[in-house]
Length: 398
Image (cartoon, rainbow, N blue to C red):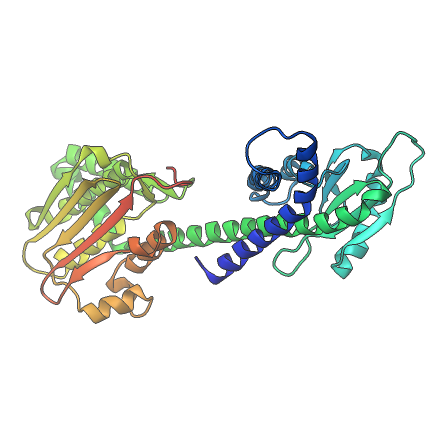
């Protein structure tokens, strides 16, 4: 986990701890009046706090919008025990949960001051409705990356002022943590999309040219073969440049690799020998999109294009309990280990190792550092690349 991630999680834990302490006394008092259920009163109050917070977190992880604010406000109001709770952006109330919705305009009038100062503000509310319990409110600013995208507002009567101010500030900090995580999620998605675009750009232009040239060579001598290769080329490019989703299945990735190798065979003929050993049980495993194809392209480049001899590429996918193990091996010219380390660190000529650093970085981002590429190579000794892919990982779906 990054340093920023650790800080964010620490803030979240601190906010929940403080909030649990604030609400613990109230929970204990209620439990004394109705001593039902397991555990001590403080334990039950803590569980209630954490459980409610966990229900409010998913909407906020999508950012602050009217829809997510409405869902979060409905979950957060019970934490404070107030008659009303609202979430706002910089200009208006996005969602109001509880009674007193007619106080929106009065609340919005205080937004500018709170967002400008970055400090919580209490204010009195006037109401001609004698049955309305909203007489007092507090606005606590939300903080995301050094700016205030909105506020959390809690409402009650004057008697609850001190407790609400303290609790509202803690809940606002917790909401801010969730919005920070939402920003990080969006940034991560943007980085991954940029990496995929960069990887697509590395799909060798000369491979595209050579594939079309090979197809053209069959047009007169073997039209049916030319037609088949053209369909393979269309499917390969459609998959490689598709939109929608950062992940795919091993079956789809291997199908794209087969199409790639079929086009390569049209060019190299008997000089290229390919062996595939695929365990059927690993085909549904989910993995990052365009994760294996660049490794095969790298094997072809160093296994055959830089050699005058016959080249062999072996692809093995095996079931290893909780993981799928994929090995891509060639008997080509290999690479100096120090040069390989430089490539994986983003130094040197990237064309010397097509997509290796890109794939290695994405695997580590998704599964952790212990799931990066394992590469065995040496000058004149060929190259063997091993990828271990967890079969199940929360949040990863094709």
